[in-house]
Image (cartoon, rainbow, N blue to C red; front, side, top):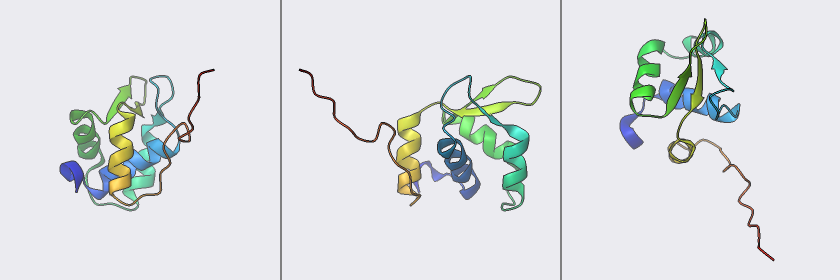
Length: 99
């Protein structure tokens, strides 16, 4: 597996990618993310978040309840694709020709 990410870490990236949380002013609520993932995974949520932050996959928006967003879109795209998730590259792969 690329970078030896756990299933929970990959799922966190997938949720952020799917919801288009790519900017520091458009994050995903930590409580909502925790609620979704604790039903499916046994791994400690805070440990998974810290691992993703240490590997520069996600960033934190400091609020009363932190929000998370993707820092490195290209790296995240390839990790999700390598794990077999159905992700589309942003921009749709279109080519714009100069006149």
